[in-house]
Image (cartoon, rainbow, N blue to C red):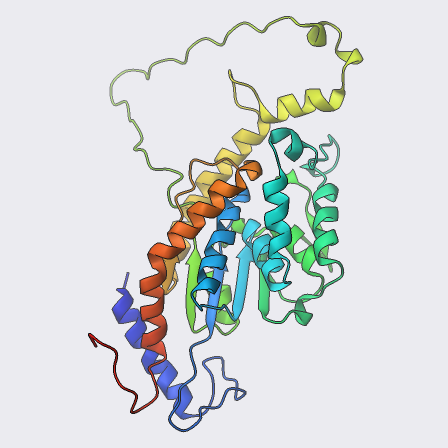
Length: 357
């Protein structure tokens, strides 16, 4: 992978040629260059998927803003689309307040309308209602900055960039994890989670005109332990599961809530994983491999990697910890981000150089 210096030098040559012709890198003539001044580059933010771990994006965004780094383009996948869409809509505080208000898994379960029919275990209407309360009927094309949510067309596998229509619909399609959430119909396409094809959407940010892309990857430390390979003989067998305790709920299941029973099977117990954890772990493996391949082929200019691998997909009630980790990760990257912005947008001709330059 080319070094940051090489990538920035190449990008700078392209931008200088564009500026001499009086247009931005996206071909637009709307941003003319005045005499003795050069505009700053168009900053894009690519927010990756990761369910509850996506609350780290809040800390990242707030840190960038606090240091004068304001994104012009925001593109998100899955939870990245939710955080990015709410930020673009001016509703990031609403998401943060909701997360801080969750007191535990019991609160989270209240948002999961689990069902046994249809094409997903969770209908998603309760979450969608919450998002609609925040965004209402806001359209993507009416947002003050460029925004796109990445989804996957389930029948063809095509990567879909949602740049028009209701913000809520785009967010919901982008986080529709197959098997967990039902697909979302937009136009004539059934859409599911965009992480199937582009977990950290750097390419989409560039396509929307970003000249420098800051990406946030939430899966960099999910798999940090080496795999043990047994070359001789069989691997040690698993411990025998403990005998199931006979309880009144098991002896007389019809007198107890069937929804609670489904949720217990959905999340599993201490002796075995539930359906959701198996699906999520499998999805984590797939997303990690796809992310590595996509970032190798189209690397961002700056990559922020909060260490959030120890958090589960449903740990939304740990908002404070996740935001703090996102903040720390962004703070570690600030110097590199400022250096990249400076390299792509040098100061006006004749300005005094800063100390050390």
